[in-house]
Image (cartoon, rainbow, N blue to C red; front, side):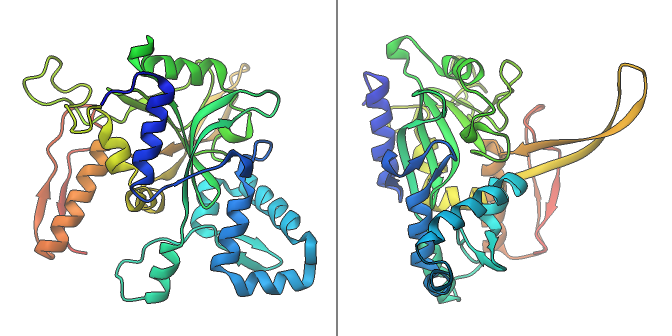
Length: 327
């Protein structure tokens, strides 16, 4: 059923995600000055690393939470959100983990048990600027660490994903903790019932959005663009029903996002040459994610030694590649 308003659309997405492994988050746990769900982070650490927490509590007593969060913020500022989620952070020479990812096989019972303890929260109307009361429609977090933001629009109210893009460009300060490149949420989605677009770095009017669309079915008006009809009644239903499904989202964060670093030569106003480092956060587009997952699943079933060819269109972000399943 089509949502009549943005709020109904928002509630519908949250409800759908909660049926697929997510927890409805609370703004009471949110620290907008540090862009963290402090309570969720501490709760996860206590639940999964009880012995380490107990040892540190003996040393630091009631000050432990504040000290731990202060160290976490400093480490995130240096190494970035993605690194902290994947590898944890050091505190008094000990490593506190902020997520546990699914092992390659399920033979390690303890690792699987820790994986199941990850808590993914979808939180609505989250305060996003320390200086005012403006809110972003949704924040997706893993164990209290924000990973993605979403601005939702509904054509029934006269707005589409394009208005969400403008909102990110004009109304979201890239310096705000939640929106800082690498140090805040990793990706930002502009969503309506028909299309999805994403950006990994907010930079005012220079912000660059890429589609996270599946491509419409043959025979539709604009074949190749947008999305085909979905059983949910929303063409973008695959996003929250499939891509954002609990295990899928954890898999994306663990294996598919990466920070691309490259050196470039630039010239200053006086014509002097110098080397600069450019960084780009890569979040997979839908067809890239889908292609790799299909290859992996097929290789697991057919075993090693087979060749696979990805057929794609120009500009899809996939290079012509012939793959051999030798893993």
